[in-house]
Image (cartoon, rainbow, N blue to C red):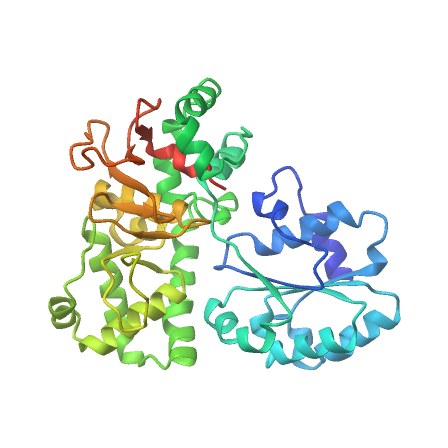
Amino acid sequence: MEQFRRRLNHTQTGFIRSMAETIHWDTRLIGLRGPRGVGKTTLLLQHIKQHFPGSLERVLYASLDNLWFSTNSLLDLADTFFKQGGTHLFLDEVHGYPHWAQAIKNIYDDYPELNIVFTGSSLLKLLDARADLSRRAVMYAMQGLSFREYLAVRAGTAFPVYTLEELLGNHEEISRHIVSSIRPLAYFSEYLRSGYYPYFLESSDLYPLKLEETITMILEMELPQLRRVEPASIPRLRQLMGVITESAPFVPNISKLSERIGLNRQTLLSYLHYLEEAQLVRALYKKDKGISILQKPEKLYLDNTNLMYLFKGSTMDPGNARETFLANQLAHDQHLAYSDRGDFLLEGKHTIEVGGRSKTGKKLGTLKDAYIAADNLEYSNGRKIPLWLFGFLY
């Protein structure tokens, strides 16, 4: 309890992720999953600080990777907390506790008056636990900062979230409104390099090291333990991520890629699927195809541009960076698929082509509901929309 109060006192509420408004906090069991460093812990503490200011005796926050749980039971903690009048239990980093899904299921069933929110950074462990909690928990996926959120943190400017339909239907007025208050392009390159994970606020110099630690944890610990990836294959997975980064964009030839990486076709496709589960890569498929673990993707990207800069630095291809940024932001709350006419197909109807400022719509032709996402552009013009503006979707 003392550690909880100390962390709560140091929690700032000046900036709160937009996701806080989309979570139905009254639900009895809520799961929040996302990569390390995206701000899950901060979101929990901010919610507690805002909604339980005078009744902290009803609330308990505990991080399950704390050494206290090496000799103490989560079930005993929940029982004691409930008997003392507790109503809201916030469990952070649940993947650090053995058999955590079964323990939470038991608490949920045995204490029907207790509300539980849990978070986990091990995306693979949370995916594996879906069967135990599927009929009980409402799960939310949390990703890194949008460009809109980055501007709120870095420049202190607050802009609303726009739905995809609002943005596509009114992008000229929206871009004028935003540019009248701030020069987005002055911040965009920095965001692409080191603005996706909120831990840049702690130290920009240590940002690459923290990002490397996240990747290493997934590749060297989680994939071997949870997906039975051979430790000898870990360097090949790093090589694979580097290959994806250096191409613009990467349209995989599985046979040639298998030969280059040194893995057979079936193993390579399985490993790509595991990397996508862990939110290290993103695969695009045609909309009319059912997706299976051994299906060849039409395009491959790293999950976000910060990962790309870590692998390639200043030598990174700008075209790949553009597409990776757009795929990351669009996929947050839309169904994203491969398009033969453009780069992306959204919700089965919106076609988006990505390019530089001088990009023309020749490839799109007379295709209806088609747009160009243009880099190095401040204002929208016709169906040409600034690339950065798609960072205002969440």
